Length: 185
Ligand code: ADP
Image 1 (tube, rainbow, N blue to C red):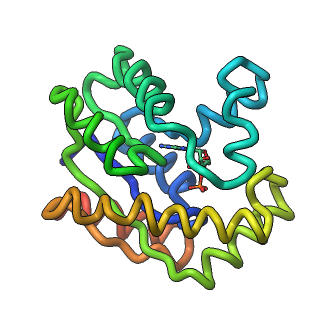
Image 2 (cartoon, rainbow, N blue to C red; image 1 turned 60 degrees about the horizontal axis):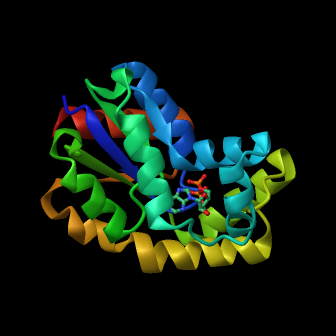
């Protein structure tokens, strides 16, 4: 089974939840740029200060910055036998940068599909539960636009390898769909 996986999908598709389940099942590290950046913001590091307002506005952090973070993370020992990427690459330029380091090339792309109305409902619900700075009505709209403009071109970029999985339904059902798609790929 492929072990260098990219989990792709719009904000609110459930990538974080599914990525954690997949990573622990396949024994590969779950590498989430969103989590890494939020940790930097919470810790008040220079990086955190640099990205805080960009993230709160629902815009993308610069390609060079995230590419450097991911390069460093993928060079660590635990990523040698595989990884699950969540939230990166998010632009074609990031995908090209990742392809340049051949050893770390992605072998499988899973696209988690959820319609826009459901995404907005989920993100507004999460806003009440978790209070994430970017989960408010205005920013949610912007994040969905950014996803459409910057990230959906990746589906064509990866062409043949993209496994489309329906992301609507109970967490364990969606997880089973993903594992089945991976097993059959
Ligand atoms: P979402 O729930 O919107 O998918 P993430 O938790 O993956 O969000 O990321 C939150 C924010 O962190 C993004 O809106 C963006 O500002 C920043 N970010 C995360 N990953 C990247 C990336 N690969 N490139 C640029 N910005 C990123």
